[in-house]
Length: 150
Image (tube, rainbow, N blue to C red):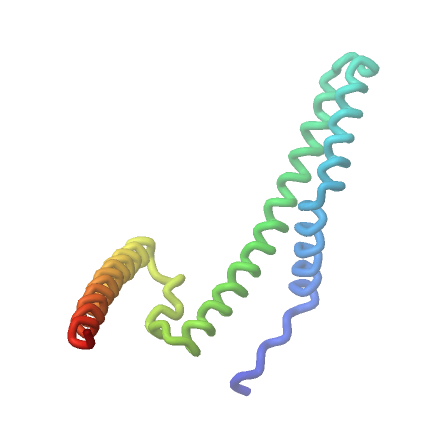
């Protein structure tokens, strides 16, 4: 069946939901305050444990595990956000006055994208120059028309 989107697997859906909720929670001020509180409690408890190797290992292990897991969850959310934005931009290009040849350029190499960027910038400079020329011509024509009218 063409056009029908494939249903995501249960694991994929679960991971996507978990990644979304986790990345939203991680960005909240309350989450930062909780994390800072844990670090403060750990630092204050240092003298109680004699600043032992175990005491240090607790914070090192905890932060390493959280960081390791968060990298994958946040990357997943960013990948989906980026893909969604790309689809939206492609649709705007497709239905708008922009060049349809730009749809899908995210799949090009860095050099190819840089080449396209250079061409787009050159085209923009040429259009600005043409706009200035048209404005100058309009002003001249307006002055000439005013002289004839007077």
